[in-house]
Length: 265
Image (cartoon, rainbow, N blue to C red; front, top):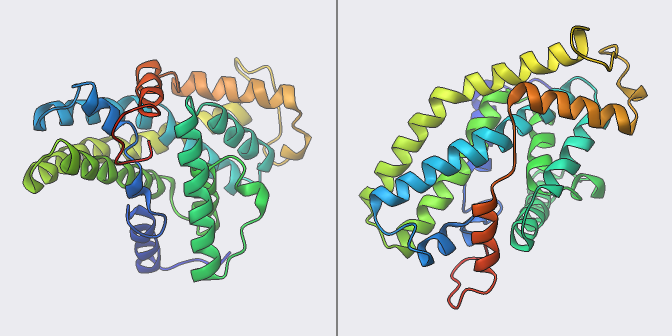
């Protein structure tokens, strides 16, 4: 890996954050369309409330610390842990649509990397979906965890707001007000999420107190499946992480049979 200049990193992150290019995530609503059908979202205030909950519970509560953990593992030469975390992410996609969305976005991102940057993505990096591939790209480009967190979350936030603007419908300025408030909430927590992940990782692998699995930070190749499961459980406990969002899962399942579908999820 070569050290990228700040301006190069910024440009690449802006491309990754786009909901139009390179991966076309604008075709997915990530739960917004069924929430509108269920009347959970019907105006600017209800849209903001729904998305604040999504940001706090789905992103800050699980996906963003998971992304930071995967980047930390990859940059610490802990490939087995990164692979196990990716498998956990894939297993936690709670509906057929969310699984399809993650898989399709990973394929689209892989195609972009191949066609635009001449980077051949191994098939094994695609099997767990979009977030794990995103983490691998950020680790390859030496993107800081807080930058990766902000980029990944903003891409989802902007995409969901655009879906609401088109479908509720909301005015463009209402959409901008919602994005601004969500971005403020995200900015206040991005560094904290990254710092918490770093502390939890270092504690898990470097300290003996309260940890049954004792491993040298440079001997990750010795990790076995039981050790991995225990380590992941310890990390999740430290970070208070959970992907258990049954109401969102039910909305996604209802969307599969929704009479009118503008989006794929």
